[in-house]
Amino acid sequence: MRDDKASSSADNAIIERLRRFYDNFDDGAMAQLGELYHADVTFIDPVHQVQGLQALQDYFRHTMQGVDKCQFDFSIEAQQGRHAFVQWDMRLQHPKLAGGHEIVVAGVSHLEFDDDKIILQRDYYDMGAMVYEHVPVMRFLTRKVKQRLVPA
Image 1: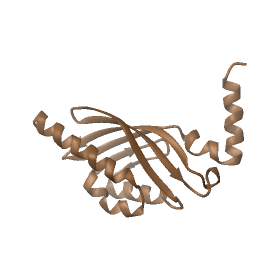
Image 2: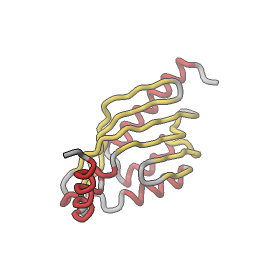
Image 3: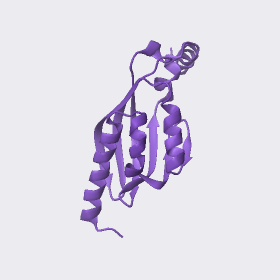
Image 4: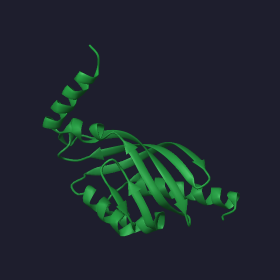
């Protein structure tokens, strides 16, 4: 078992590496994935779940196809032992979403550390804010559903 002071210091370093990695998230960053994520990483988001570093790299490469810009602005973090939560805003620009204009999506990641790397990352964010509200047909349907959920 790791010493709490050493663990806290190492975990802070992981958070800092996470910030740098996602500062300008692009295909070039994929080469550094192994410096941040454990070989047995589990990554879960509203779209998909992957197991292992290679699967995560494949998933990221696939999701980044066609993306003009993707960066994360981290604001709040909380840590306890081997776990941390970080709040972020993703700034995404894709030619097929929002007419190619920047979309800002708020989210939170739960992280778990092992061997000074991230072994679990679970991302929470609103898929509607990211995709559905920026594709014309889906935007119409999303608005209709929201209107029915709100009392008149």
